[in-house]
Length: 257
Image (tube, rainbow, N blue to C red):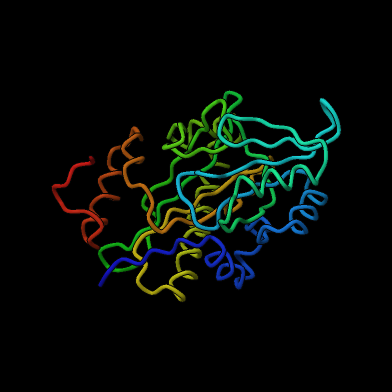
């Protein structure tokens, strides 16, 4: 049985939105149009514009209304920060950037920071040796100082969540938060499996706001296994890898290219 991959963020979001429980953890999102961009910027002040199908943070744009240096819109792609004086100018620039690809507009979550750099979380969920969903790894992803995305392939730094959260939560609060992440991620897996029965692994990307509320940014059906090598506890990667071998993602003696 082959491992199922689902590239469309919109398709996965629509399935998760059927769940009352998951809905409270999902930032509002709409397909990119002039109207959806305008309404969501008006309501939230900051949004992320991202490809419906895309990986590694490629093509993700952060857009926000601004009063300085002047009224208008500031937007960032990669390290490049640009300014549009009017909504019409902004919209045309984004249309040019996205070309003919489908994009989403998602409510922006102001991420917690560590040493003035934003971070989010990757939760690894895999089918275990009993064919049940299990959370096998949780890791923080610290954004490159000049970028808006946290992905390792875009210059982000994988880091133990305990280190990133030390200034934001006590040890007991962090333990409760980790339990919440596990329950949330297993629920995501169970819901997506109803539509995609051959899923074997998920990378659930989660933002944390100032109130320590988790937000599901997106779910990857072909997550990077190897970022878990960066954790001090090597047993985490060993389990992730062992399960991936069992369901056929990698071969037992393969090496990363």
